[in-house]
Image 1 (cartoon, rainbow, N blue to C red):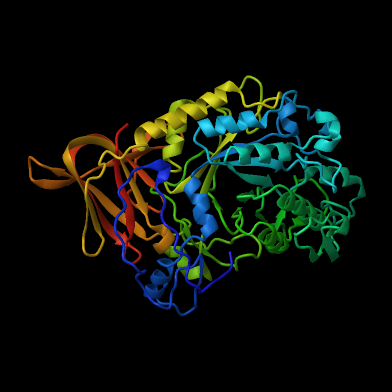
Image 2 (cartoon, rainbow, N blue to C red):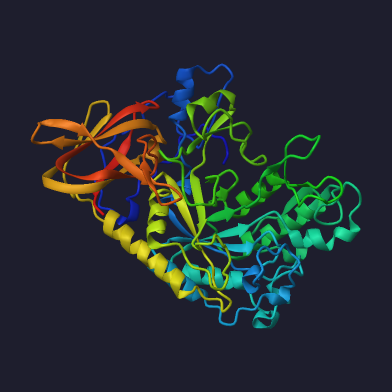
Length: 552
């Protein structure tokens, strides 16, 4: 995500879920300071006034790659590795590669399930923290090539990408820094102070890839880094150069660790009780450089592209998420360091930041009711009502939902998971697939703070849909009211909204942030022929692009 002062490309706003929503008119050019063109990254200066900080926040917009990612909104997550084939939870890299042996792997069946469920994007665990690789790497013996699958000639990643691309689905790769297999097999060779992945933490000049593995038409690289980071970079080169376009790189456990007597640094801390300094230091800048060169349109989760919501329950923050985030470090260096002072994106965080960046939120959650990511026998799935609450509390709170599937030991997605996915899509289509206002006109106030839909006849509704024109103006709305016209009293009255928490309890909602998509549930259905939004707080002129009406 390079810092830029160039005008951001104008990308037309999409209609979510094929919704025939009324788009609101906008001016031909962006409002605001001519010295602040829209950009995914805007630098803050120490002397910036409160007004200048607000102006800068109002001009942070998504990159083309981020906008394309946000439009997908519903993503399938697939956990499929060695732990699928054992009953005990949480293997840490000690399982032999020979346990991986699907008897009837069918990635085309996966694609059919995802298409039927309304998914447009799928993320696969190519390498989890245990280190097992779903493709035959030239740099590791802990991979599908050492398993019985297809007599060691299989390539699950190839089958996956081919199936998804044939079905018109984009792909993402979960490929995380930890490698507990390497950690464990090298334990006997550790020296005091060097319990890291691989033999040595000493840095040297290293090429990526090795000459014999270079892919025609792809660049080669030279890095000054340690042994493990070199291994990781060479594996990244394999997956980002050999399997077609990748629409998301999902980095797990890419966190800043703190060891006693040290400053925070990027790395994974192994379990307590190991001798010496337990931190493997990550060369994030080298990773990002390679990834940008090989997959320039690929946003990075837990990096400079996509932000983790902070939990694995499936729920974004009540009131919605900000995508304009204050950070303390430069994009492309390490892990984003969110500025303190409040929830991510709040005004209070601006004072201790050096930059404002566009970092939309992703919410990951297992479908399993027991919280399992990989398939386990006898596990039930979350109820249809819980999945509905998760959808409206993630996608409906300006986040994207990453819902996990676990193929079983045959290599197919079980029927109970497929049924849940299809049932959720049916409800999404039934509720949000049609705007009850249809082609009813939109009335916009002079300062764009009041947006009204006038229906031809009284209509009963209990859901409101809202969107901002983030492609051109970023995310600006901070608070608003939802009102309906009472024809008997000839007056507007405020509508109360509710949402659900992780216990499936209905709780009060807050009318605060909007962003790319906001869905709000009315505490009681209302029958009216006029609905309006009154913006009561915004970072400069608000630009709401859609107001839609729905009923469950």
